[in-house]
Image (cartoon, rainbow, N blue to C red; front, side, top):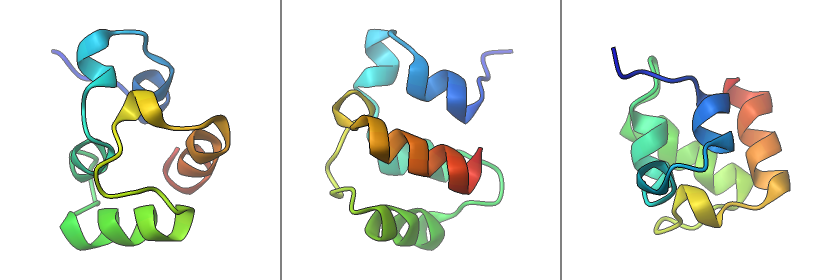
Length: 68
């Protein structure tokens, strides 16, 4: 089906997943739209242009706590 959980996406070593912008990943989650995705990123202090591969361990952990 081509779907994966947030935890799978954050732990993935797939190059294509790593190049995905965090905002796009969040917007693809059920119940998270553009406004909520940007608010979450602002709260966790993730830059708008950050990609999944550039996230730190603490940022990934906070994302999983909020949305996991």
